[in-house]
Length: 460
Image 1 (tube, rainbow, N blue to C red):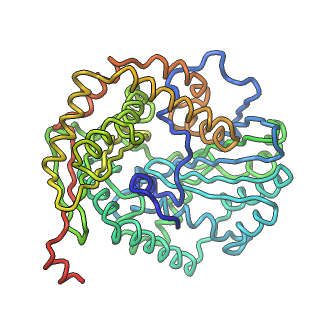
Image 2: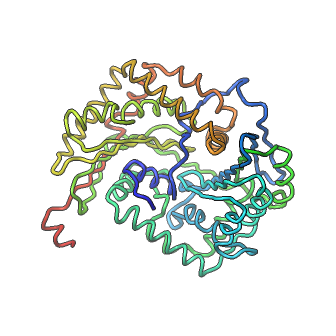
Image 3: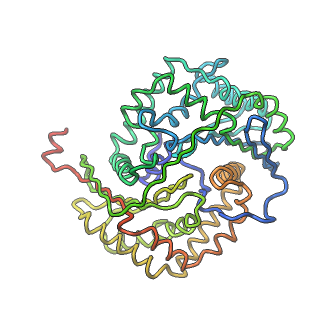
């Protein structure tokens, strides 16, 4: 795995992904219906078993991309089975009743295709990229693993070991991951977003075959999936293949609804992690909205102003001018339920975390009181529009955006009011969102505290 910057690492930890999420993020996109902007060539249909399929023809090149959004993530787990959604991300490549482990990849690659997958708090998403000549092969492969996934004890134990190895590298032996896991587990006291997507160690050890089979039957049912095809195809072609390969997979009873609502936080929470490290780290997490909430888009814009690039407000002030931090970054988790606006700072060796925390809160309070400059607002708008159109220039970006909007916003059509939504956000709206979210009583503060030299010596 390539080396990741801290922000990318935390995003991987937040999603359980084996790669980074697509460039088109849900919160950068519109929240309201699109009117007449939806391309007429896009069609969607639902099979009798409940599987929804969206098709966007794009004949520029003879390639196709498929995304399968499975509504199975960390929020669907509970103590005893945490990490199962991410585990199935692995298992879905490891053999069926018809194919041996590894054959899925070999057959796809022989047909000119490639694939990947990621798991988040909310979904597990499978991606295939392939030439249109491989359509029949792709449908055969995808229907097979949905209908006939094998549960071979030796394979299960092998993948259990792989997941443990991921956990050691990304959490147990990584100070940023270790602190992030503890901050999230402290920020949420009721909602299942508190669980790490990769799973708690004792749960990884204890998953039973019954746990696996029950989870797969419930969450990998066609009525719990949304497929998106973009590229050199027609809706009639996709419908014909779907009828041939996918229509006979039986629907299942819908998964149990996640009913828990995280109660309002009534005061600052704190967690300290002690670890062998050269420098302290400071993380601050604030409760924020769900992907479809009205405040999510302006908060995404606000985060771009605060932490996106060397000209961002927090970087200029805390890193360059006052040298309170070596680096500063942030992101917003955007799911079915309210998530977090998350800031992470690496401090200088011997840096005072209390001073850095106070200064960060002061800068956030200033935005809540005075808003941002016209130049900052213009920059953020330009970045968000550029990111969007860059993504929409590719069939992969189109598929990711369509699927995200269909799944998280209830309709892919809402995607196409992007420019109007971004242009409508003004300084007063950003100020109001900052005042609502960036309150000390709404914050969870995490500190990674380097062990003293003698303690480090004992550990080593």
